[in-house]
Length: 309
Image 1 (cartoon, rainbow, N blue to C red):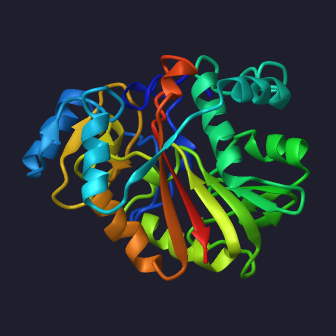
Image 2: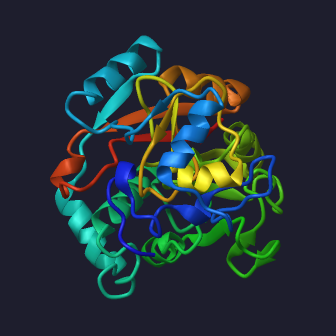
Image 3: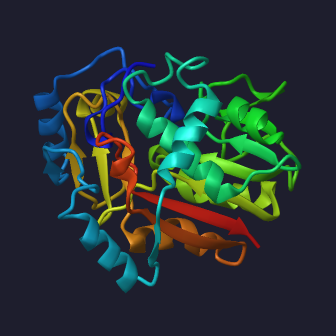
């Protein structure tokens, strides 16, 4: 894919278009009939939605402390996480982003490679692990992790053919064609925010089935905000008839090219994701406090690690 800017301003082609799981409606990323940004905003307002004509800001120095305070108040405190900058640099070279994956997110490799590095560190993957990259599309994570750790790696995506072909698992991530306890480690990198409707809740119920006890799944970036909200580009979401969460504000990001990106508040994440699986998972939250030191364009600030009990 082409280059990606920060979450609030990804280029249309480069947005995480193939990481979306279906809502109740058949999933259409690029509707045949498009609309203008102005007409899309007007249609959402006419439908009674609160519209903010700006991307969500969950990375600025003014907003991050408010998010951390809201999480503390909700009983979901973030642990400070210091990225090992030298370790990240070593990982970047060993993984071969410049050589083997030069076209992967060209212009945004610091962000994507940092997501991969943080997930690898938090998951602590070893040769005996069975790893699955969820909503993987064309990500190099499975190959990189397998080469660097010796783990057995799979990629999963709804865009793949149904079933298991080699190391690809095709079909809905909320109903994977794999047996109970199939995997030990999994990643959701720029993925869960695109799961529309109740799919985010259903995903973790499915992960409770397919992860072995002690298994872990990492969400990075974790798109969290002071209130629940959804970011959208109405030029694609309005013609596709996307059904957004009720009552939440809609941040319309011109040029983003993506139909749905859910930002949780700490409370809404607890209600939507944690509550249905609270007996099956332990959740830990991390604030990547020196992420910008990797590269100023990096927008990952938060991560979640869920461990199967």
